[in-house]
Length: 73
Image (cartoon, rainbow, N blue to C red):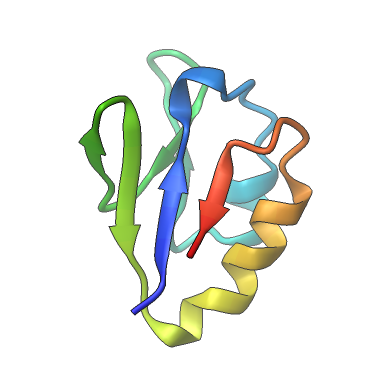
């Protein structure tokens, strides 16, 4: 199953991931950074397993991120 990783501390809050993959991303009203929905924090990195049907839109979100804080494996 594919996994998404979000290095949230380096996020600049550009909102690109939310625009592209709204089912998995939201913007925090508290600090203006992206939130990986369902993500579990491990050593400062948020990660979540995603369904195969979510891969394409999250790959687009990953490519759109101007600071490259979204990774997938």
